[in-house]
Image 1 (cartoon, rainbow, N blue to C red):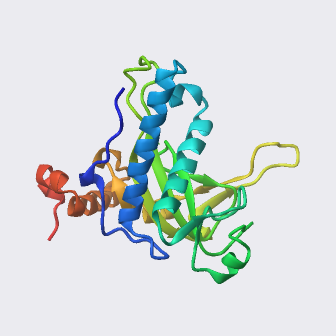
Image 2: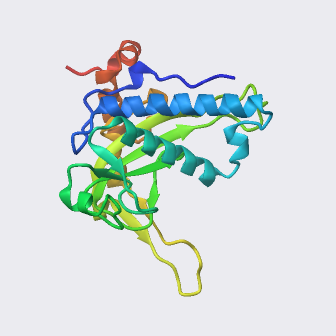
Length: 239
């Protein structure tokens, strides 16, 4: 079974993060996730249970698992963060040095400070339940082809981890009629996606998306921290 590997060239040490969180801590959280995921799949295969991707068949179940573990790992490696102790509380990660949060034992229904995390296979349009003003970290991943044999399936790996401070105007809210039972959602619009894509913490250059001058900007930014990409694509190297 192939295990995912952290790619040093994908890591951006100059990414901007709040509350004293460092890009290195996010990188360590990715490594810890890869170790946990690899160990778990080896156990499942040894016990003839398949692998994580075949146990959690629904896309939302798999994304929830990946996102929850990545969030926990980031809190574990960071001296600045703790997981929100309220299930489904907002945001997912809270700053430890917030006295108001500490007085509530970090059990917060809806707070103004912290980092909300999202996990998705999609390259944009990430969703929340409301238009939110907060820092967000998006873990974007890919998984192996489900038609492959269990042993030969490529592992889950992160292709982008992006961060940005979004405001309410970076979202489009979708309501529902009185007769509808559809979950109310808000989706990140172009302005929000641009903020996130402009601040990668970890990024596979093949995962970079966008159009026109914005995509060129993302590629130029990537070349600034990925020497391999810069050597292969000197057209994106800027002085």
